[in-house]
Amino acid sequence: MLYSLLIGLQVVAAIAIIVLVLLQHGKGADAGAAFGSGASGTVFGARGSGTFLSRITGILAAVFFLNSLGLAYLSAHAGAGSSVVNQPGAQQIVDGAGKPTPATSATPKTTPVPAQSDVPKQ
Image (cartoon, rainbow, N blue to C red):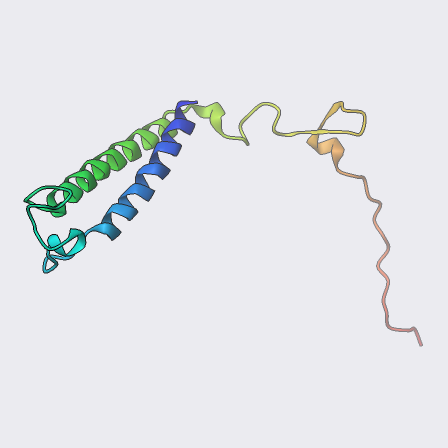
């Protein structure tokens, strides 16, 4: 449950960082160009949108980084039984009646076919 929640948070943070980086202007761009001519009349105040977007991007980057560390910790300490291969029922195959059978007996028995050649005998 926690792992799924952290994966969802990671995806949301990644998408938000991408959107915020694309919204930001370069160093030469004027903050007033996006919201009108007067810098004091902008949506984000007299300092412009650069500091607001930069601060939110930094916070989201920190969330992304800490979330990555948390996911790595959970993956490393999940235990030996967390792998699908290591689970007790992983090597069982269910037959037609719904009963589990061992994987070795589930493979069909084949009889060896004598080697035949396509070249006609003379």
